[in-house]
Image (cartoon, rainbow, N blue to C red; front, side):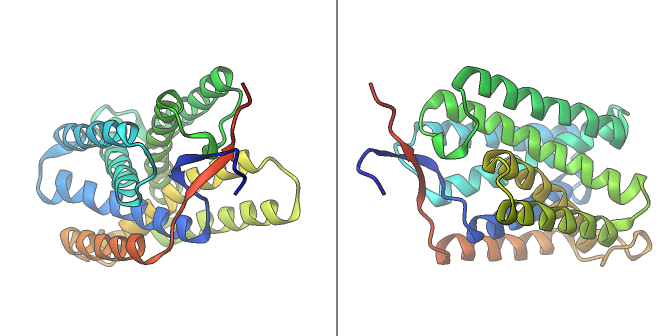
Length: 253
């Protein structure tokens, strides 16, 4: 790393990053459904609980002086869980529907990235090292996680593909993004955000496949059990997979 490089407060994007990200998105789906459905707290209360946790963790993340893997991934997990309950609240309780919810949230993601780019001149994640950029980063991530839940539900339920069919579509889309990354010179930043958004509905459909009843095409695994197992695997990966902060060139005065 150059002596002029500035360390980011988010991890370098590696294969391990994507593995933990998919686990976090799957955890968000099963944990969110555990609270809102299995424990019958409802979408509004579930959203309030996880949104409060997300706000606290984002504040801790911004206050931190450097990248901390456990804190970062706890914040990601909170964003995926809040995204699950918020999307379900909008789609089901407010009656927007999966199609309307997906369209609205896609607009929110695009708007967040546009404002971020207009303010900073870049939406590259390796530049996340100031409170202002971190605020844009976590806002965009929260929108993308919520979008992913709605998009996964839309493809699995509204389109009739089912959970495995929808998961297959998202895997195929991620393969296309990976091929574009290695075989073309398309913007790495744009491809990153495309992959980041797509991993969320992949995790959501896999999570639903585990815990939905047999009659709905799932495996009928207990939601609390699925959540505990996925969380344990995720925590193990966080501590066993080497992680480092991303970096970017320092701005010259």
